[in-house]
Image (cartoon, rainbow, N blue to C red; front, side, top):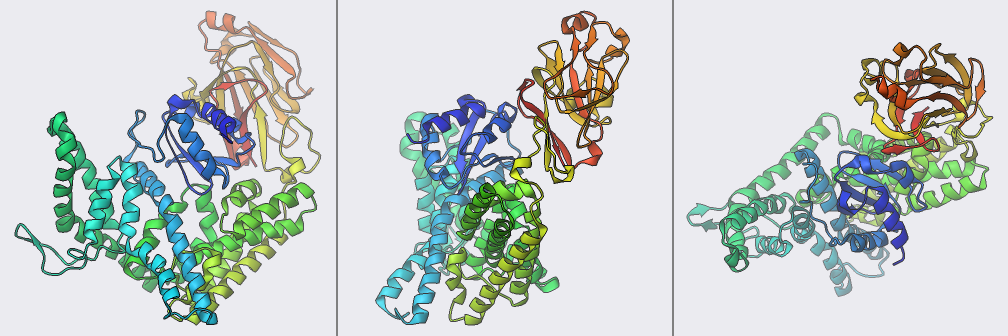
Length: 614
């Protein structure tokens, strides 16, 4: 296997096979559901050659890899012994309902985006070739190709049923059977139907989104109930047919109308927003903020919204134009950095990520450039916001969910004005972000990354983060769990504790000793960038009056990372009944954006324990 070594390393670093409940993927991310996230060694994962970044949020533990994730995921499943779509019924922490719903919805939408985006791109191609007269819109060739586009949206309930059923652990073939039955000529849009005397409302299930989702959720509970009631010897023969007989009528009577009401409700909300504030505002804001939403893992929340728009209205007045403008603005922002940079390695990074964004895959740019330099977010807010504002004011709508290469689909039914306005909006977004990125400039050179193990001669304002080494080897202890309110409340600053496994305390940074308590149980160091670090050994150990403590430095001394600064007899401290936990805090935390403790459970003096975000 091509990625076997990488997969084995990644599995080990997320806590081993036994810590993995499931694995899913989107276009460039592996999404892990872990039993215990504290076992994942995030910083070490980031050091793997194929990893761009790691994002951990309420939905999943996400490892950003790149487009090769499509090849890595099957090999990962094979090593773990998982099927292509993982069930989430394993042991571990019980998920909150909202978290579970977000995860299931997010992971179910990923697979169906492939045919939907393909259909949208095909719609654009057909619009262009019919415009040039190469193929007539009435010709058999055009109609056959257009049948692909129509079928994808017409049979949308079937496409949704497969991944959604797998995520819920429901038999996907039974789910597809229900979806196909709903779309049969007997039921789909039929009038005057009744079931056992219950009048059925006229409901169109083709192109729909919510009815089949509600139906599959209900099917899950029917399946569980039958597994408890039906004798095991009879389940294979009778459970499938009973599931269908129970699920279908309830869907026709309840979930069909309810799903329609949900869809209409979403349309009403957006119509209200459009009439009150204008769709232009939502379009502008999303085009400006999409990179930030993707970075925090919240990019998929719009999928059911725009899918519902296409299903009920036949077009999307907000999100399709917005994400295209935002994607090209990401390309423009990184390209602005490309023209601004003089470093060959940076130019290579900016060039490749700009091309990827141009092709519609923005994550390499977001995690490789935006997170690191931060100012590109502002560039996209400017360029994407301007492009989105123009598209919104011109009332541009999307007729198919496409990327930049599907712009032809904006012609729709000969709506050439819509196409031209969208084209202008894209140009505005691209040029605006490119110029903004070039003017804003690069805040820090790759050579000047904030490695506290090396002297940095540039001004401190050029540094984006400062890495603090662990002062002693031991177990990581969350600061909130330290038995001292002054520290656990973060009143003295953010940081962490370490349950020491050795006696020697070393300097975690390059800097100056600015304070040394007479009892030698605490020391203060200030770095050349002004970060003030307090290392405090033990709880209430000041009462020992210096017993068991030895110092190798004095106030005013310069120290380098790894220098011996203190020694404490940890066994002696414990024998006196004191907790020897070594506490490291940033006392001027308020001067920085954040102080992030390491997620590794075991630390040593060669590893980073804190990251100060400048």
